[in-house]
Image (cartoon, rainbow, N blue to C red; front, side, top):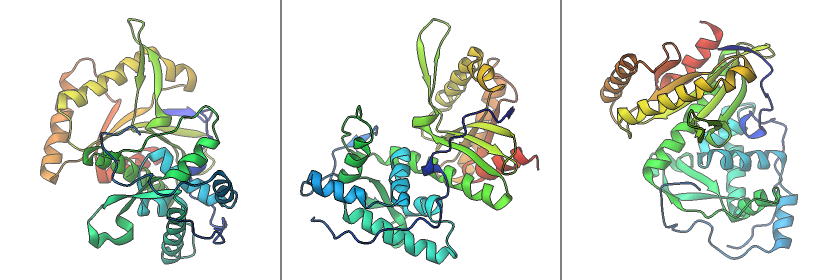
Length: 324
């Protein structure tokens, strides 16, 4: 879909590569020691109580980049160190200096309980600090809650492996889009995870519905271009049956029929399925079976959908917007 750039382009700070000049305050002295398929927490949001005075002191010394990191973790729910480094430390002189600064900042944010880490690593112990998975800890949650008077306290629960795999895969796609767009000279105009990408509509029976894409993406072929391409992205790791996945396509068809996107933005975003499985040959068979199922279903709009391997989806989106 090609549309005039009248779409909301307020690209949230957490979704942009941070300004490399944002400096990190190292002056704070150490303090003492949502929405998931969950099991009881095993240590997150625990520890000595943080007084309001101490919290205000911590918050007052946060840099702009600290706040952007906190916002990113909140938006994506869970992020690895690699994700955070790509989102906020990519503009350092060298990759090594960016990685060192990222490790130092994350260690400090952990020491003040702004961020916490899960009791497991992605890639095992050998992955080192890059395998740590970060979430918003007690101080970070209170700081974010202070920004919204109506916001309720969130209870933290340890995520199930399935939920965590899916959440981190969405973040993988997001940071890959940023990296590939930067390398190719394209512009990421907007990148919104599920909580910001939702679409509310009324179905034929007058019942309110919510469409929940995993990501909503707007890309321009070159920085400053007036035309952008828009995409809804769905990440599938092979956990759901194909009829369930096809059912999600029919929700997109239902939303398409409302004409909401077309009236507001001049067209409907393409729907891109990024599909993977535990083995490459299984993933390829699943993609082919899904394509055949869509082609057999008369309710599926031809040309609306794209199917891609998970690791190739970012490059596919950029190629499409640049018409390569």
